[in-house]
Length: 195
Image 1 (cartoon, rainbow, N blue to C red):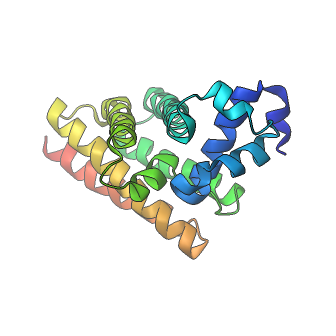
Image 2: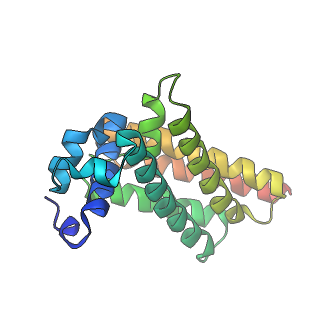
Image 3: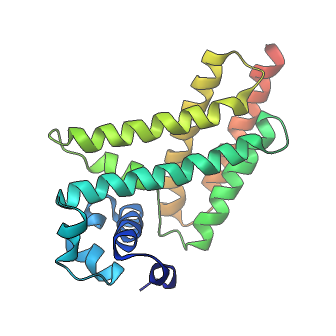
């Protein structure tokens, strides 16, 4: 069991285990047996803490993961530099994290979104809400562009990151993330110069 999990309540350990599982294996990573084993919690306790079962656990895990990602994006936006510098820093930071995790972990929201079936509207809504929160958090990084363009650039950044993350994991290389960050930085610098 991960040493960080020992400090948390059984409920928190289950949410953390679900996040880690979804980052590794999509929605399947939040399976009851996997979460119980990874969290060290008794199997019966999952339904005590999450009466809605796997779907409730997955929803809460996505919300926590989404909030952690949103906070990281807000910190980036408040950091020094212009939009291109912030983009380079974002993608370099993500590349460093992925490399540190030995390319094993992706984005929980993307992993779950790719696994959703047509009857999974509640989890789809949670994924959409997280993407919207990330867009709102990232949009100010594209100042001095007009608000609509900031939103568009924020969405494009998230879309590009998710694709670059998939390539980086498959290739076991940080280069797709660094290349994507550099190309986005050049493109936004060009648009800002025309504004």
